[in-house]
Image (cartoon, rainbow, N blue to C red):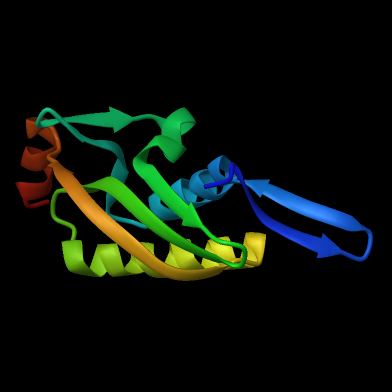
Length: 131
C-alpha cells in the first residue's frame, strides 16, 4: 500500500494526501463524539494503551485505494454512554469528515471498543447526590 492516497491527476498537477493524514482526520472526528473517552492503541498482550491527542492516528488503521477508503478505529468509551449509539455516531462522523476533507469515498468505518473509562469515585458520588 502506498504512503499517499488520492493521487489523482488534476488540471494543474496532482494532489497527494498521506495515509497518516487520513488517520488523524478519522481520530479527530471520532473524539468529537460525546461518549468517546479517547483513542486506544489496540490490544497488545492484553494491555490496552490509552493514547493522547498527539497520537490520534495510532488508534486508527486506514486502507486506501485510489478513490475509496476503509477505516478501523480503536477507542475507549466513557462509562454510562450507550455504546451502540456512540459507535454509530462515530461511524457517521468519521465517514462524513473524511469524505468532506479528502474527497475519498469511505466504504466502511469499523469501530472497536477496547474499554470503558470509569470516573473517579468522587465524580460518581457527586452524580448520585440529590441536590
